Amino acid sequence: MRKLFLILSLVFMGNILLASNALFEKANKFYAEQRYEDAIALYDSIQQKGLQSTALFYNLGNAHYKLQSWAQSILYFEKTLKINANHEDALHNLALTQLKIVDKIEAIPLLFFQKWINSIIAFFPIDSWAVFCIIFLWLGVVFFAIRKLTDLQLPKHLFAILIICSALTFVFSNSQHTQKTQQKTAIIFSSSVVIKSAPSFSANDIFSLHAGSKIRITDQIGEWIHIQLSNGNKGWMLKENCREI
Image 1: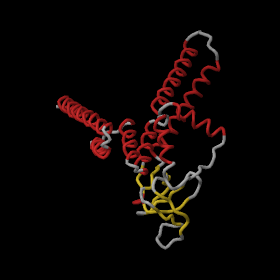
Image 2 (image 1 turned 135 degrees about the horizontal axis):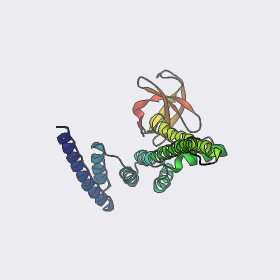
Image 3 (image 1 turned 45 degrees about the horizontal axis):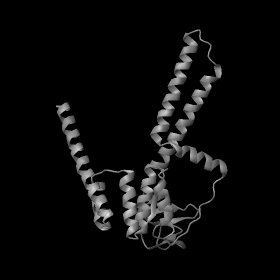
Image 4 (image 1 turned 60 degrees about the horizontal axis):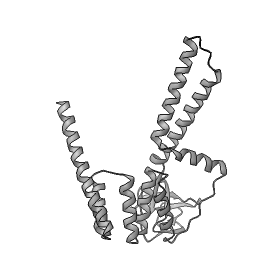
C-alpha cells in the first residue's frame, strides 16, 4: 500500500510539473508578444500550484516592470535574489526598478570586513556550504582515526585546520538559513504609508514610505508591525500595507 501511494504521488507530481512547464512556456510566449497581463496571469497560476523558481520570479519581475508596476516588480526581483543572491540579471533589473520609486533610502555603509564576510557567505548557496561542512568534518574524523589507529605520520595541525573549516562552513550555512527564514523582509505596496512611533493610530507620525520601498519586519503586535529600514530608521505600520518577500 505504501509503495502504491508513493507511485501515485510521483505520478501526480510529475503531471503537475508537466502542466506547469507547459504554462510557463505559454506565459513566456505571451511575454514575447508583449501580452504582459496574460503572461502574469499564467505565471501566477504556476505559483498557486506551490511551485517556485528563480526563472518564474525573475520573469514575473520583468513582466510587472513592463507594466510599470514598480512595487510588484521589486517584490519578484527580491524573491529571485532570495533564492539566488548572485543572480546578476535580477540584481541589475532591481537596481533599475528602484530608480523608478519615490523613496531613495541610503543604507548605512558596512565596514570593509563586513562586506568581505557577506560576499563570502553569498558566494555559495546554503546547500553547498552544508555539503562543505560535512566533507570537512568527515575528513577530520578520518584523519583523527588514521593517526590513532595507524603508524602514519600525518601533520598534527591538519586535524585542527579541517575542524576549523568545518566550523566556518557551518557558520556560513547557518547564517544564510537565518537570513532566509528568520529575517522577514517586505515591500511597501500602498502608494503612501505613514510610519508611527507606536502601534496605534493616535501615535506620532515619524516619516512616510511609498510603494516599492523595502522594509525589515522586526516585531508584530496584532495588525501592526515594527519595521526597520536599511538606513536605521524604525517605526510601526499596518501589515496590510506591505507584502512579504
